[in-house]
Every structure is written in C-alpha cells, then in structure tokens.
Length: 299
Image (cartoon, rainbow, N blue to C red; front, side, top):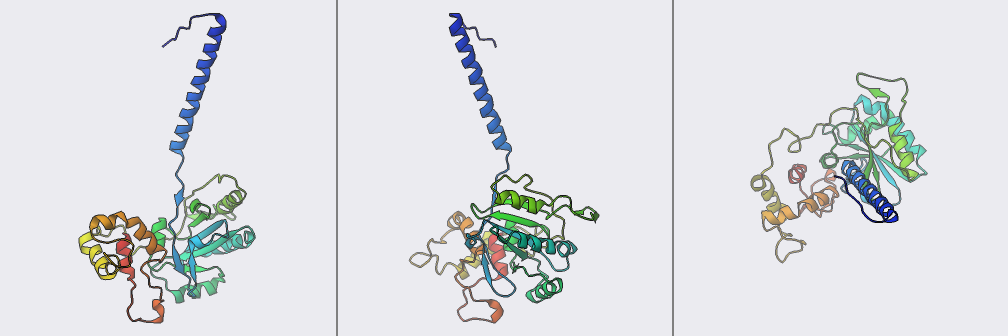
C-alpha cells in the first residue's frame, strides 16, 4: 500500500525520513524478538549434595568462592572415561588458579565405593569422585552417558557447556590427537567474560542405566499407591497442622504445589533431616528415606 504525503517539499522530506526510521526500528525489534525466540534458554542446575567415596560431603551451591564447577560423569570400566579422565585432570591443573573446580560423579548402579576406589588407584585419579547412589543428581541433570562433561556457572547456576571433552573420539574410532578442545575453549571464554561459541556437543560414552522407578521403561508413578504412603510414613508427622514442618502435606493439591521444592531438598539433602551415614550401620529413630523411596518421590 502506497502512502501519499502532501504539503511543502521540506515537510514531505521530513515525513519520509520519519517513516523510514520507524520502519527500521520496527525491523530491528522484529529481528531482536526472532533472535530471542531462537536463543536457547540457559539451563539452571538444581542444588545437590553428594558424598565422595571417602565420605566427604560436596554441595554445589556452597562453591561460591569459584566461578565454575565442572563435572565429568564417571563409570568403572568405561573406555571413554579411561581415555578422557587424565585430560580432565590436566584441565583441573591448568585452571586451578582461575577459579574453576573439577569433580567426577559416578551414578552407575553397578559401581560401589570399593570398586570406584580400586579403579581410581589403578588410573591414578586424584579428583574428588562423588557417588550418586540414588542416581537423582544424574537424573536431574539429564545425564545419558558416561564421559559427558558439564560446566556450571556459580553466578547463576546455569550450564554454559555440556557434551564431549574434545573431538578426539569419533563414531567408530578416534583421531590421533584432538583438533577441537571443546571444554577447554568453553572455560577460557567463560572465565574471560566472553560468550561461549560452542555450548553443547554430543558426548560419546557408555549408556547410564537408571534403576526403577527412574528408568524410562518403568510404569508411571501413582500418587495414591506409591507416593502418599511414603509421605504418610516419613513426612506427615512433621508436615501437618501444629507440627514443625513449614507446610502441611494435607492433600494431593498441597503436595503438588510444593513438588519442585521437595525435589530440590531431596537432591541437596536438606530433607529428610537425617544425615547419619548408613554405611556405618543402623541407627535408632532413623528418619531417613530409602533410595527407592527417594527415586519414587522425584519421579
């Protein structure tokens, strides 16, 4: 549609320029909106707390004195982990003075503390190895394979890189040397205050098997049959009217409204309020919940 402008030539020129500027602003806003729609939303990591194989506790959101926490998903016997762990350790050494912390997490149900320690000694691994016994942290992070690395900013607890450590391992084989050091490049950019050019790659590794009821092929969880009995036995004595719990688990609606909070406090072990290490034996008046119960609640 053509717009006809009448009036003196000077006024016509001013109006024409104004329409051009308005059109340019509209195009810029449209481009910005389109770019924002396409830009991936930063993935925030829920706080978690895990013990390493020596019984020491590590909590993600207590690491505020560093700029980044970098995780590698471990697994005994995985050839990809065995090839990459020393490169991961070398990066830990390289960035030790640059405010980055490096941990391994083992969520493989077939690995116990003793076998993890044996493999760590065999491979001369001196990294903290956190045992995700319930698999809830790996499940929350969406981990599918061992050897995946995940780099987390402690400023806003979002992931700024996840995927392969580098490009040395390819489908069906490997290169003599890597040509792209994905994790190292991401760390250099992030710690320099620059945008990470490649924030996600495909990780090669062994598939992590999730035990029931976290596994994909398991039946859906029933609130009435699976969840409510756990809450009644372990939680409602505190989370009810007149008791110490900060909210009442009086109905499905109430529990559903606090479900994200419940998931978070299960992962960071704020709840249930019981921190005695079960590896040391049975305790009187135990207020803990079992691994199977925690999995059912999170699922």
